[in-house]
Length: 254
Image (cartoon, rainbow, N blue to C red):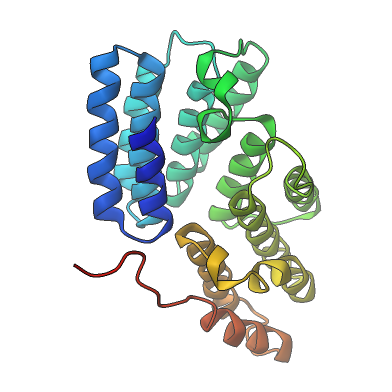
């Protein structure tokens, strides 16, 4: 678990090669422990690293590999692997697979029996709030909008709005806000998109991790392709997102 958390930290700090190295260490420990849930978690982390590196084929492969390991498990780790698969499939443009996986995850949620990893919580569990966030993101990656999906995206944001909640995470909140911005944008609401992403752009530099920077960048890319890209609000928002990433070494050189 320690190696897993260190690997996640490396990924957040934009050092994917170190993240993958530590994930392999975590995987070796999990195999030695003969713990299927931990083994699946490391496959999920490999998928997560590949996803944020814009390697959706690799992300899908690792998630599918982990999903096989969780076929007979009853905790939430199996649902996380399905969510990772769905997001990777969405990045690959495979809408049918996305819907099938998300439906499978919804069906499986009703049969969850919390296990030892769920009891530990944090990054080792996959709450319903995060499942909704992943499902919404997969639709956003497919370029979908509309009022019904926007309502789901708003619920995803609401699910992470209370910092006192045990399932709160600033990264998941920011990611869901970026997804809401995308979905509003795909629905033609530039001002609504700007409103959704405003809290993300106001995050201090210390909180702008890799996933958040990539998510904000997706909004900028969508803005440049939007029919409203010449609008003043769209141009201003593009310019603000462009300067959002920070150049900071995650660890001292040497």
